[in-house]
Length: 322
Image 1 (cartoon, helix red, strand yellow):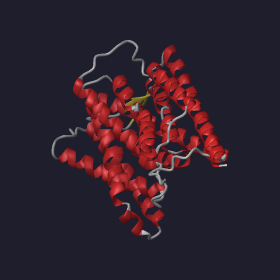
Image 2: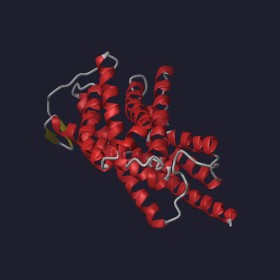
Image 3: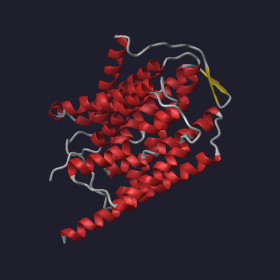
Image 4: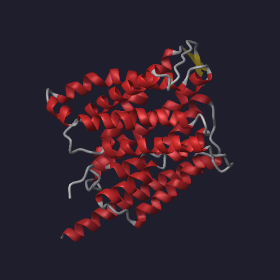
């Protein structure tokens, strides 16, 4: 059966090691966005303005490389244009817009928790759509990672849920799940950097359209911001957001998904939450508590469990084939 994504467990250890390394690098890059944006939001920037600059700058940086990677094969882009548009609308613009809409009604912790149920959605999608039933070890790893995520997000203190906020967060989860599923599809022939460029361009245009009709408030303040007791110009974090947390993060994320498959890549991406806590500690002085540290270890243990489950599934498939 032909599958939409390259989600077969990786049999060659070097490929798996490279995929996990790239996935962790992508997660570290994505995770930096929260710590960079937080002081800007505190100084009066609107979330919409920060997100639009981040995605727009990322698109400008990646686009020339994405075009060069095509090597004149414009037919590939025309053939996959619907997929690129879907990626830009769901995985880029949709996930960003819905998440920031959710945090208007929910605390950051609950909103992140709901959005990061995306790996479970990916597992369910691969099971229902492609018959890739997860094994017990994979499910156990997912459960351990979920518990660790609860601790990292420090939601044990309790929080109230706003129905509208939950709906927006679930929509962000769909966007995140689409990111992993579409990124892992290596049957299109599109180079990863071309898919990233196309998605960022579509996402930037979509966010710009939302801003024009007033659905995405735009407010910018040109005052300096402080990170780790160091004052920097207002444009410095914007450049870092565009280059690192958008351009580099999306390209690395797509490459990792193609090396690992959407299911495993989505679980490795849970490390983004742990990295977000660490970045907040380094740049903002927000020291994680003991439970958050334990949660981080559980997330990593869960990812290892999922990976071992993938290897076991691959062995079983090979035995059946023989």
